[in-house]
Amino acid sequence: RYIARLIDADSDVNGFYIVLDAGQRWPLQTLLDRGRGSVEWLRALNLSANRHRLWSNLQRVSRGLEILHNEGLVHRNLDGWAILTSAGEDPDFQLTGFEWSLRLSSAGAQMERRRGPQLPVVSFARDWEAFATLAARVFNVTESRLNDLDLPDYDVHESMSALEVRLLRDLLHPGQRRLDDAGGQAPHDLHRW
Image (cartoon, rainbow, N blue to C red; front, side, top):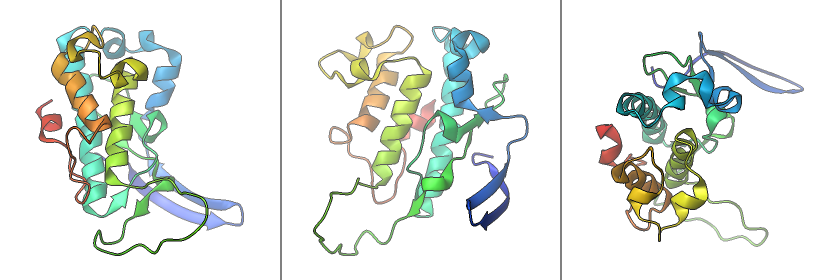
């Protein structure tokens, strides 16, 4: 329901392949690339019904992330290509794009320090940051305005309430509101939408 169903997986000398049951869905990124005019609920985000539909869809993505996180998996590649939708009237976003996913070992395990290049941090919180970045993109909010913490929440975007902006900022800047990185749980506010 929240995660695209795997039909088959295989590999050969050229790579590893997975086949998903996308149904009538296609990547969200294709809608964003075509322009907001192609989908009514993306075009008129100042209408509360459209924002509600979008938040219902984003809630589906957050539940998909929670399922992964509860299994110890980090998505690592959440963007418009990792979400499938038919762009219809009913919320139907499904999470996909697991080619970079990793299972994290126990949080209590000690990591051996090695010399060499610094590797990117992999964490549940990074998935939530990517979620907030994706949500901002879907709402057509520029990252610079969202990340400008001197800008009041209510002044970031005309189609978003201060509460909606605060939620995305909380996900992007977890130092201000600590996410449970050990469990990867979404903030409770996210499930209100």
